[in-house]
Image (cartoon, rainbow, N blue to C red; front, side, top):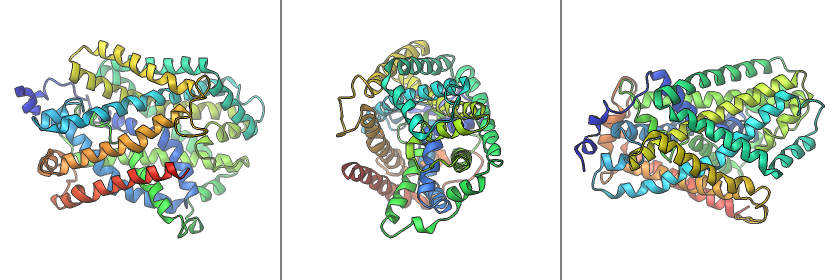
Length: 469
């Protein structure tokens, strides 16, 4: 083991760091702020009791999400490495390094289908601004048919997936400051401005009061003895997945951050921004649905089916719909660039090649992995890996969401809290370095025993849900 690896702090001066704390906050938040929490959080909150669900979700975010973020950022900042070499740098000679491989694989699985969905968002943005989707009012059946027609045509999906993948890697090719930070900071500022603009617009819709009541009014009738544990599981799962922990995608930005602020402080800011975007997305979506008498409880179809129908009925729907899908595209693109930077950092750490070579190699791998997902809706639709009616996307999502993310989070928690890993004292020292709130040593029992159990329960619950379908 070289001296630089045994003393990761020695690498601080040679590793590129963010030019500003704002850059770190916006980019790390951009990694967490994605399509899942923007459209998943609102419809789950509406289905499970509105404000009551939101309160349960926030509790789990504090108890589960933020601690996991602090661990990833601490490992990254202490090692000054991506997940590709962080275990070796912090605990040389131990077998933790073997855990990294399935977590690294998780990044590629995520990007294999996330690039496709980002391509969908770009496609819908163009179609909405062009007026194709708003020339005449569309029923939900008609907007659903448009979406199905897109899935049946592989060529435009391949084209738009290639375009967004190429664009994301092109940004990363310029490096951390000139590329990722220089592009993502204004992108995130514009994303927030678009969201605030759309949320303010919702106040003037005729269905604003009904939509907000559906979304945020505590509806105790939706919480029964039979579904109470289902609601807890949904809230816990949302808090867990919304921050994008478990595969090292946040750790890479910890390796680029300064030590001026405590990790707990930074993790809390990221969680607040992430939740704020999810919360405001609901304020945009539900008043629009109630204003135009469209059923809001459509689950994942809310974006591509329900809202397309809503915008087609709306005055100036071409503008409002275009701005909304532009916002969704920016949210997806910010996550895309963040995770691309992670896989590039991993490649640089492990293979010691140039950034340009890392960009080219990863572009080829991720684009190739995305093709089966795209073709699974059309040319390969006969493949039903998860049972009748399933597609290849379902398999990718199951591998990532129900396996890699949970197991990767367990690895991080055990690594940071048990003596045969990095150890809780080392984690505390790094997490509490800098100004801001500190992690108490009294929480060791919680980190060591409670957190792993919660994550493992989610893991088991996920398998139960799959087999009960």
